[in-house]
Image (tube, rainbow, N blue to C red; front, side, top):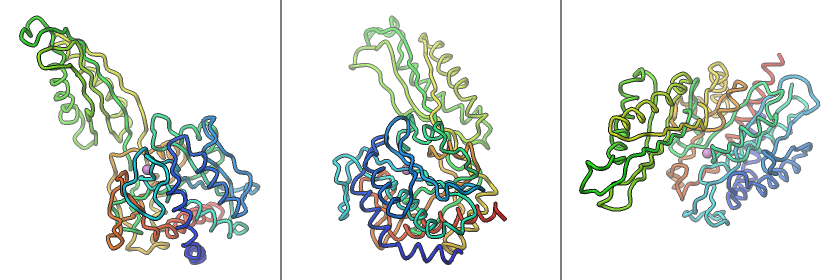
Length: 398
Ligand code: NI
């Protein structure tokens, strides 16, 4: 079966490149992927799919379709995110973005294509599949505050699903190499804000003021002691202050300072303790310096945790489809992904698929204005996703 899957994938290589170029040329931002959704639908209809469910969060963007909807038995889901980024493409491929200021710089054009490729392969094997496959084309991955995954799950996209997989292309991994990791794989990402209220005054007479800038400086430094002094050194935590604002000119002490940043964690217990620890430092230090702090932390995305047994089996399938030398164990990433929401509900794995090809000059990381994907990976990724579905369904049915 794996040989049939591989040859079906290779036979579609040119078509897959054509599809990706079409998606690449017509990128759309989060929750605006209406034309993208129409293009996905058209490709699926050409393959003979019907019964598409379009829309998420009340917006006609994103699409879900089942292969073998009438069949009983296990159900395996494949997920692609479909949105692009608000940035100008500076490279010059023949399929360059036709929309000013919008670009598929995160490779989601290739995610769509590889899941469509898997849908095409599996359609040809439909009658032999011992179960259902659900293809999830998810809007809005790039806007974590309005997660498309969360919206689709709330609307029931995982109902009846037993396991799920997805890929993210990765610009620093060689083309065609898949990176796998069992267990916590991508971090939880939260957002914090702290406003420090002091007492404004003249820069020459600080004793008559309460300086929120000095308090902010002390707070920024002390927040780093959470990682170095309060958290078990074997845990992984990042506290970053990425934004600070205070004051207007050189000789005025302002009345407030504003700080904003992100916290990254893997362990849910450590994550849930962070607001209390940060609030204590922000308030305590501000108070010690004659100011007052208001602290808020907003949970944005949970950690992406790959099921151990599923991931080991997926790696075995990948070795058979791509070759044993093309499967590598990679360390976790402090980046975050809304694939996390699916993997909270059902077991599965999320993997990084390399796109770097120096001979072709494809060397940039994602979110780079000249990011591009090596088209050679498209049939390989499609074959891998189809093989994961086949492997899961036949394993469950036997
Ligand atoms: Ni992405």
